[in-house]
Length: 124
Image 1 (cartoon, helix red, strand yellow):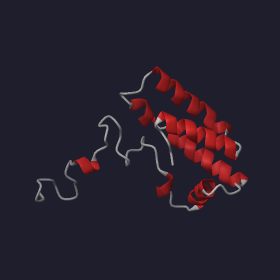
Image 2 (cartoon, helix red, strand yellow):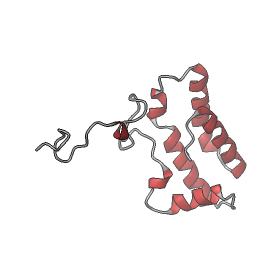
Image 3 (cartoon, one colour):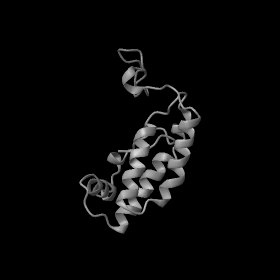
Image 4 (tube, helix red, strand yellow):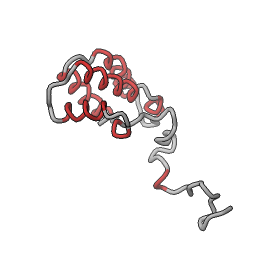
């Protein structure tokens, strides 16, 4: 069955609103795409990120959740698909990936986020 734009029932038309800005990057629903913390449904991660953003004291569990979130974010192969990435960008991405497991303090996290933002892969 075709809809008014010619798409089949249950399919979305190919519009600028449902395509990534860079066509070489996966759609958010793709398993290789980085997953945003705001879509996490358990509630623990959102609470931990909220504490981080409010500059509140973080528990060991908060650090564990934030590290795990940043790790899945930065390890996404989507960042390797950036056609604009040069050698410096690839090195910065590698440094972020290598450093994520060492995030033990709020200062470590804020420095990592600063570098992620500079690299264009800010997870927040």
